[in-house]
Image: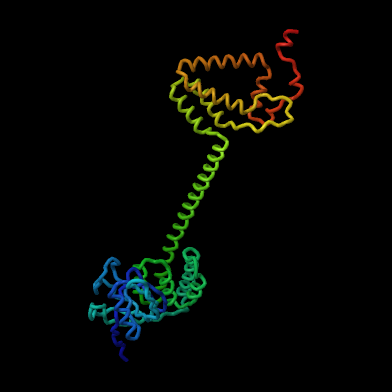
Length: 371
């Protein structure tokens, strides 16, 4: 019995970046005039067309040398006219075929194609069963990572255990490059085709996982930046409502003090005062039940602001002498007023607004000395 098969003369539709597999239904847009005429010619005949990918996607008028030798004979199921000269067609792959010769290239490509048969295989071999199981697992992982909608349809379509059909279905719906899909299409033995598909899918999953991690990191950084920006804007508005501009004042004082080139000890003291100015907060409203008010934190705040302002405006020698005089007066105040250390410890506390009544009734040092 002869294995000869008659050649099919069919209109040829070159595909850019697309590979259609037998047994799969897919759709794509057609925009080139020669491709549109080839589709129209197929619709006037038996609706059969030869789909073959071109090697260079940038080529607008491919010839036989620009096309792969193996493609898919498909049945055109539906045509949808789009605005302009474009159309969207729905095709169903039937069988693999090899391009033998080109009959003519104008007004559309028309060629002879020979059907290619798939060799048989033993489905009961443990290696084949292991490949089928692994292919199912990898395709499920791919659906979880890359597919946002239509997951159930893809899972139902990949439910077959036939090695060749499973390889074609996975390759058709995966995000492989068209070169990798063309290699799978050109591999005729089903087991070898499924093995190549599994290796390609494993590589694709690694890339998808890396993309997912990068996207998560970028989204996390964007969310954090948006949150920080939102909080800063809120803080800026609140400070404007309260009439405050602490950070700019503190930074200005710090820059002026550093520009004076003061001695290290003097500069450190002034910078500490600036830091206290930034860290301090306005005092809450005075409670009506206070018996006596000591030194509110707002007063200390204003004192620090004035002190930082005029100290940063003084020349180097004057500011050094004033810092020394300030230190001597501070020590003299501590000797004369034993409660001075207690006053300093109360700065910034909520209890600094009121003092014990017993201390308020304590006679002043001047009166006790007079007695």
